[in-house]
Image (tube, rainbow over all chains, first blue to last red; front, side):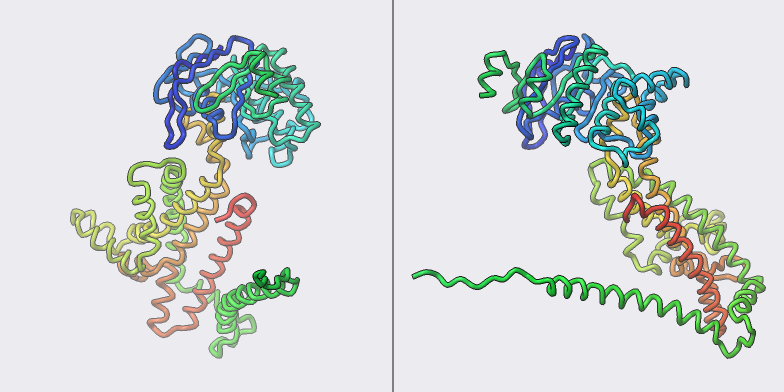
Length: 222
Length: 281
């Protein structure tokens, strides 16, 4: 469950005012908005990389407004994947578990499970330099899911992909959400992506977030 | 009445060739000048009338190595340059990281301040060190000034500034977003730095070490003022060249210069090999 309670943020010319948002448990929410409307800023506020000027962030009914990103139990996939250049795919998937000092066998089991789910067993010993766009997104997704977070934030994960890979990753995202039951907030400005994936639609414009009802959805997509 | 239009023709291939040719000539001229400098030193040692050996280079180098003063200078040079390089990187990593990642009050002033050792005349750096250390208690001052620690301090004062520049560029070229993702995966800032950012900036660290080492090797002005050039005490290879010249032994000066050239080339090649694949200064 993701709740933003009257969030304000002001960054020079850019500002978001009085944002309220409520995404229920296990929902696949899609947040749409034009470039520069503040979508990424909201994701950063939720995962703790940016502090709001005022307001509260509640994740699974806990107030995490002042918690560090590490303490929030949120998986984050940034726009370009931001894979660690010096690590192999195996090390990327194992990273959060190594930080949590999990047992070696538990790490191997989890990496193997994720690699199977995301169909990346064959690239586990490769570094990001040799990966395709689709493979990079799969690895970034696996890395974000590795510690079994309750919430997954996706920042335009399909933007740089070709049509075929995009459709594969969209299918994968649906499958992952059904398999793990994670609450997803997916940021995009692509309408078809939102329609195919989202169980809940949100739109940000002029610094305000509003939920789109089915009628509004149809209206806004005309 | 219609305005007259000038006839425009798309640039031909010869225009592109001329552009590249001019730049190539400038590059080749400068590279040739550097090559000539090295060839002149080698020719002087190889064909010196004083050197009648059938192996003139080996003879010249052996003669240099036989001199206890030059051996002492060489040992001090290697030790002081290595300590300076390690100290420089130890300071440059946090300094470069902060300058690259954070905007704090006085950021630009600090940034400019760190460039001062690079732009100041070397003699002024030495003189400033000498004056600064006059304010220390007498015992401490006498243990440092004109003693071996002064060699390292004088080398560090300049080398560290270069290392900070390199480390800042190295951190500028790493993706801050990766460290942020690492934090969402459970890392503290320190862990994100040690596990993600520092490994990604590692080619820059190696480059900073080698450049700081090479700068320390070539340091002369601050050393002369702050550490002096006492044989078997504070003499390093750069001061050996000066001392050999001052007693009129040009051949020994050139031989020591070639030893320094060899060390510098080895260091530059190492820096290029380690750093060029993922990092550009």
